[in-house]
Image 1 (tube, rainbow, N blue to C red):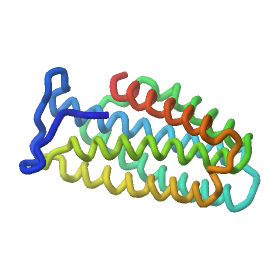
Image 2 (spheres, rainbow, N blue to C red):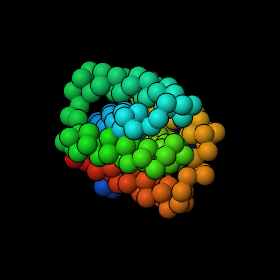
Image 3 (cartoon, helix red, strand yellow):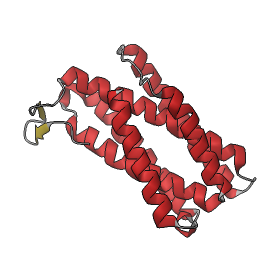
Amino acid sequence: MEIGRMTESHRTFHRMPGDPPPREMVERIIRVDQAGEYGAVRIYAGQLAVLPEGPSKQAVRDMAAKEKEHLAEFDRLIAERHVRPTALQPLWHVAGFALGAATALLGPRAAMACTVAVEEAIDEHYAAQARALGDDEKTLRRRIETFREDELEHRDTALRHEAEKAPAYPLLSAAIKSGSRLAIWLSERI
């Protein structure tokens, strides 16, 4: 996602034709990030409902706890800044849980493959947001950068749990990344 252009020397947001105004851009960022963290919580809930006890399930519990912290922060920002949440939240409620449960039904490695794919899509997304936010939004930019680091740690945890050994890993990963990118695009706008 590319949101406008910034000059490196000034860190000033420059709108391009068709770009949303700065306030709308920030609202979109908060809306989509709240939706994404909500979706992550739901994915992990689906996985936890299906995965057998063991190291992978404990790793999912730990990652889910961090996602709940992220969600609480974006819920706070939604309220504080009077941002309309995505109208698609009921869909993400069901789709997130279903994705988590379906991948966990394929086994712990597939559940971890789901985490890798989602976190790689989120990494790209958060990196673009951090680049787009200027000095007027330093606090939000820092928060996004911190959450991005957490998401990369989740990806690394999933890789340590043999995500790449999941059945049909390249296909599974590509499908989940594409779905994540579509969910991001839709949640920004709807």
